[in-house]
Every structure is written in structure tokens, then in C-alpha cells.
Length: 425
Picture 1 (cartoon, helix red, strand yellow):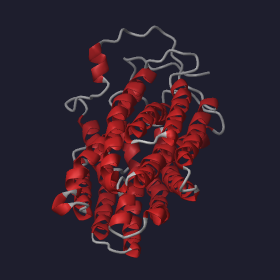
Picture 2 (picture 1 turned 180 degrees about the horizontal axis):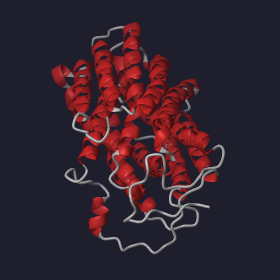
Picture 3 (picture 1 turned 90 degrees about the horizontal axis):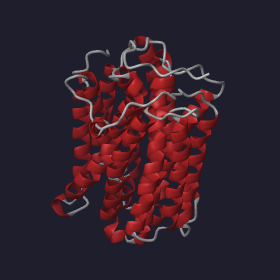
Picture 4 (picture 1 turned 30 degrees about the vertical axis):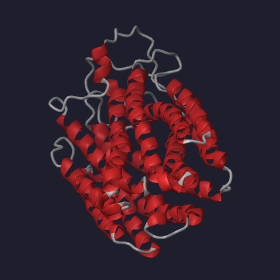
């Protein structure tokens, strides 16, 4: 049986308990696979498939076209994800509060991947990316809410760390898939990762006990809708600072990952026909670095209860790797930089999500609050392209040194932002 939802007046959930119910065998495996599927689809299509399509469509305008698609999709997903999380909190169904969003979000996301595969212009690419982001963004909001709903605090960093490791593997595997597909078959660059992502995400629907709420919902006002996107820093300062840290560190990473293929082509001098292979190698090196640190630091964090120290160390290592990447003129040096940044990212994600769930203002609004958490890595999809175009144009265009400098600044500010968090060590 599914556990009832906690009431608004219920006391805080104990440290080793969660609002949900015991899960069937295989739930944790499918939970990790859902993270894997979501990130394989969104990460691969956003970082590999769309840039590759634009490089073949019109090499001269590829940076601007990518910025437009990424920014438009980023704005929409910022609206959709927190709203989907809030609506899942309010869902009244015997299927549960999260399961319907996971299933139908996967279906809509796959439809978006098909639209992208058939796209032949900038605006048809925008339309497909919007549909994919709406679908998988909704599923993503429900999956993230399960971390607070169903994963006990005592193992939360380890589960988040393993899920983050699966995310890293998904992105590199996705890039290898696109690399192996024919250059003359654009639709496969989108439909294949989209199908894999939708299936792996949707499977979770069939193997989990969800919280069921069938009581009458309170009326919803426009003020409640607007509140979906905001938590007052005065009433939840620790959540605000932890969110800001994640925002800035995500921006630091996105400055590099979004334009990685173009960096390889323009700075390292690799042809566009073979650049995705070099990108796949770089992402493999990044993933190895991340996997080396993710589970290790998640275990250390759960054992010691320390989150902030690991975040500081990860930001320092990332800054060092970005400095090396900023001045790299050859592939070997650049791969070293990616290894360092990957190791730093692995350490960061192993504890960051656990920290955020521990400073949530209300467990019974976990979907809404974790939807706001999702904004911290979705806002960069809008901000980074908007900032990257003028940054890259400094000094005549394609100024990747300035782009890396912006990434370093964001990472350092992210480390400083976690300092004011008081309730977590």
C-alpha cells in the first residue's frame, strides 16, 4: 500500500525516514536507470545531436543557431519543470502523484525527438526541442521529487552519487551512439537517443510504490502558481544559498559543454566530419574522471555528514582544469583539462543533490521545491547562450579564452555561495 501524504501540520520527516512507502525489489535500479535515460536523451541531443545538425546545416551560423535553440528551450523548460513538480504534488490519482508524470512525460519527450529528427530548419529544430524539453522536463521533475519522497537520508548521497555516475555514463554513451550513426542520416541522431531515454525513464512507472492522494485539493490561486517559481530567501536562507551554488556551478560547466564541439572544430582544428569522435573521446575522459570521484565522495559524505567541504574542493579542482583548457592548443592537453573538470564535477554532484534535499523548506511540497532546484541547472540553458554570444565575439569572434574565463568566474562564485549554508556541514 502507498503511504498517505503528510499533512501541512505534520512534523519534519525524521532523518532516516521518508514520506513514501517501502519499495519493491528493483526500484533503486530502475530509479538510477531513469536518471540514465533522461540524461542520455536530453544531454546527447542538446550537446551532440543539435550542434552536429547545425554544423552540417550552415557552418557559418552554427553558434548563433545553437544559442537560439538552447535559449528558447531553456526558457520553456524553466517554466514547465517547476510547474510539473507542483502539479505532481497536487495530483489526485490512484496511480500516485509521480507515476503519471513519469509515463506521459516520457511519451511526449519521444515525440519531440521525432520532430527534431525530421527538422530541416532553425525554427523546426526549435519546435522539436521545445516539445522534448516539455515532456522530459516533466518526467524529470517527478523523478527528482522521488529523491525526497522515497530515498532515506542515510543513503541519499550514495543514491544521488550513483545516479550522477549513471548520468555521466549516459552522456558519453549517447555521444558514442551519435558518432556511430551515419553522417547522412540526421533523423537517427535524435530518434535513437530519444527512444532509449524514453524507454529507460518510462520503465520506472511499472516498478514503484507511489504516494497516493485522493483527498480533495485546496483551491489554487494565481498567487500559488507564481509561488511555484519562488521560495523566499528570508524564510529559507539555506535553500537559497544552496540553490545559488548549484546555479553558478552549473553555469560554469555549461559554458564549456554547450560549445565543446565548436571548440574542437575552431580552436583545435578538427574537421566537422571527425569532430564528434574527438568529442566522444573527451567526454569519455571526463566521465572516467567523474566516476573516479562520484561514488567515493558520496560514501565519504554519507559517513561523515559533510557536504560543503567537498563542494569547495570540487570547485577548486574544476577551476584548475578550466585554466588548463583555456590555454590548450592541442588535443592531449585539452583531454587532461577535461579529466580534471570531470573529477571535480563527480565530487560536486555526489553531495550537492543530497545537500539540497536536506534544506528543503517542506517535504509535502517536494515536487515544487525540487522543481525550483531543477531551475538551477535549467536557467544556465537560457543565460549561458545569451552571455556566450557577446563573450565569444570579443576581439573579432570565436574567443574561447574569454568563454573559459567566464566559466572559471562562475565556478569560484559557486564555491563562495555555499559558505552561508548553516544547517548542513
